[in-house]
Image 1 (cartoon, rainbow, N blue to C red):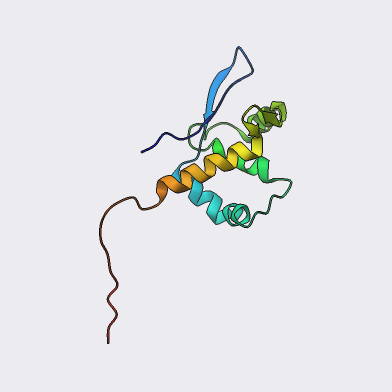
Image 2 (image 1 turned 180 degrees about the horizontal axis):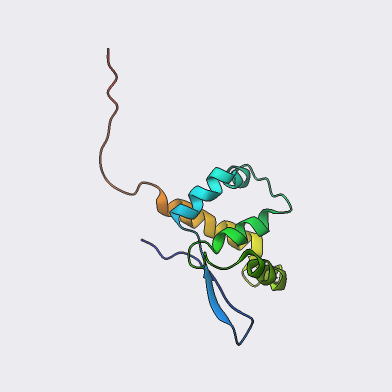
Length: 115
């Protein structure tokens, strides 16, 4: 499996806990059920999209982090970095996770329709 992008930081900066945000298959399923994935695919970017994707990215490695703490961290993030906007990076991570769960094997398959 190819390496995927993670969003890594320390909070509070220089003296806090290390965080590594990412998406897993289970997180993608949660986002899909909530309708966020469909909105991303349609190109819809509501005001809350960055927060929703940021919040969901905690679930893989930091699920026990309280929503209040996630909100505090989010408020401290800058909107952009050398890698692009926060939303762009989160969508890149989301796309990588979607690619990782697609079928990858070589099993030949066919349909069988009854006459």
